[in-house]
Length: 245
View (tube, rainbow, N blue to C red):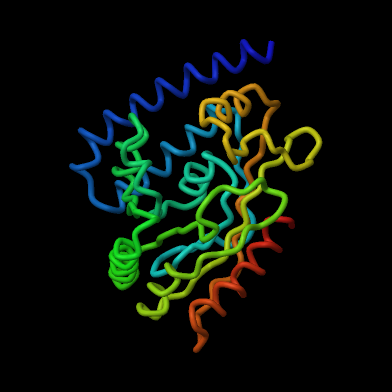
């Protein structure tokens, strides 16, 4: 039964992605930015429903920008989960741009792509984030730089926080967690780490019992004179508390 359910979920997701690609190419360019954001958020909410993932929001999502969301990174599901909770522009590794279909959707969602191994490109993205924050936008970063196993929070890279400091914009910590709907215990089914393949992680998620994605928003804060490294450590502590509560 689990395999049958997973196949049905997969079919619905594939159809939903194809519809999303069509909307991104034909409909989104004709809409105002606020309408585009609402359409992307609605698409993400439907995506989670097709995948058998419920959404639970704790705390207060940002109503308006500027704000830089700072979250832990567990799964390939993190981006649609955060989009479903509150539309935001993501900073993602440049590889995602070349993924079939997903790259089109990521670009349509306003993603900023970064070459993680290039210091020069990191500075370019810092400037783009700064300008977007000055334009009162909401952006999101995963300072761990890669997905963790959900058990231990990896060290944060502080570079991108410089954009918020330069723009004098607040950062808001966000804790992500996946739970088994029946037991309330942490679910590691959506994890995507190490040498694991993306397809393998997706299939395990679709085979799993119903999952709840928890997005826990903390209080937004300004740097208040801290440099990016000190601020990064404080935000990491806040994210660590939020993801476990």
